[in-house]
Length: 426
Image 1 (cartoon, rainbow, N blue to C red):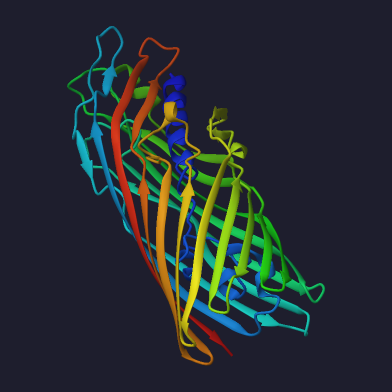
Image 2: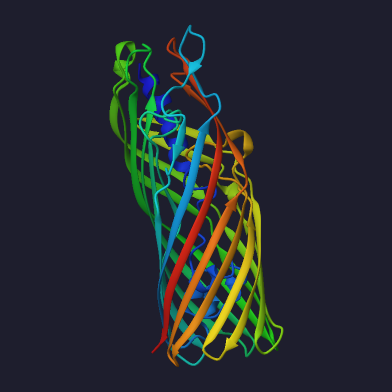
């Protein structure tokens, strides 16, 4: 009977860890960059750009930044024919709530950083950000319950960097990136008797893992060109996995055991430029390649068993254009637009990752409150293309209890982000 528990556990981990990928890479790492939809983020100079490029602090002097971005997500999922099939029975509607609204919780993204020169050519810095995030909670019961009830993903990063003014025109930097992952997920499994309530699968996992970054900024007259690199990170999480509520012949598959989860999050390569077109107008551009194909499978181990759960994410290329206009010495306005395609395949899109291609429109401003203190403001709206859920789930495969569920639905999503940061020289 252990095979019942194994199949359910594999389904849990397939949902939980895929939710850390997809379109849930946090873009709000700098309020200045957010105001241009991250156009030219890797070419900015200063402590607040450290998360995008470790070379950004080489000429910043003593600087600190404290910022916060608040993101509100509008998410609606509508059932278009989800089903449940028990052994020997015809498919029936999945049941539960068929229109799900406000499932995504609001998100607060901190942006804390400091840069300090140690010589006239060398500087060190530290940045604290949240590079990945997802919080979803669907009502119980709902038509997506066999994929998930609740999902919590938090990845926090501490980046330590050193930057060098290699020449009068070239800055180089490297970083060590320590990331903590905390995850929790609840999902349902069907019992064989239609009148029986669903069983509940639960996962919790956490762990610290290391990556690295590197960057360069080349400064010419009126032009800055930049490269920023973040390595893929191999995640190794310790957690606990359980199944409770299976009844009848499935009851022996209930379990509660330690679990280990392994997978990789993607690398990113950013190519950026900033052109001072006039004394008061600067134009920014950035192209970023995201190595989501590194997220090829999830390794699961629990109760003496192992499994490899294949994923199908694609590498993507995002792009953004932006501009800054200095209205007066104390006021700078900015704006930008960016396009970010989803790595999630159309034929495998799930409620745990309700993602789609997005276009982001942003505006921002900086106000010089004093020679040493600047206030940054930004607002951005991400418009997601229409997309459809297309998720097929199998339970208790290879046993007489083999069952299946299909999740079909429409996704309607948009995100509004507001940000504020204080930058100070000391």
